[in-house]
Image (cartoon, rainbow, N blue to C red; front, side, top):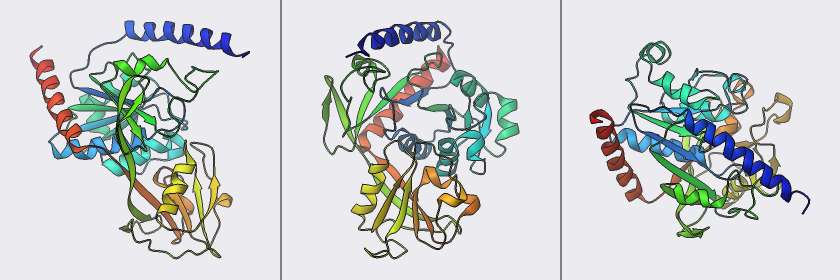
Length: 331
């Protein structure tokens, strides 16, 4: 294949860049979890970050989330993000995570700088009044951003797509060689109900399950199992998705026995008013909903989903983090 020489060049340049970032790495005083992937495209990282924030808060942790803010204009930060932030400015996923977790969120292309801002008392108190200082950082993506020190790496792979043809860019979908999975603490196969072998690594099962329907205009929520709107084959809902794998969202809707008309958009698409029909049931992801609030109607609904993994993995993580924090304090 003509692109094979370019794969070698890509790997060489990526290796040099990672070595440079690794050399600049400085420690942080709290544990850092990176939730990332080795492939391009969406794999379910943000729902995993959301899950970790929610369950670890129940264990007494005070997480802060960092992100690049992909798709936003203000990626050169650090910039604080809240549920009311403009997704066009700071990116859709950070706003979604701020709304879902109620945790402090900071975006910056330099993820170390984002983490340092969260731990800076003056920056934190100014931007997140009412919050208690963070004692844990969770990075949404950033596996390859090695200037950010990390204590735990969780990698998410899409079970249906796997590692594609197993080649790195531009020949295949990999950001780095498959062997990188062996360095991660845990690998998950999103969409699998049993452990999978991926490149010699056992990937834990993970699935995205519907959490609730949320009305974009009123904010009311309803059980995911009982849609609060009516659809039929003659009057299907306008289902739209600007995510890495729109088909996953459409399949979820059909599994819920909702009649839909599929409308996929590019990942991180910024929706315009004219792209969303009036007077019709419109269904979208939570990630897309943060970009449609200004022109929402009562017939517009978001389906919030949650990541589900084995409960013992969270319990193990909590104990791991407690040991890491103790080590950092006494080190």
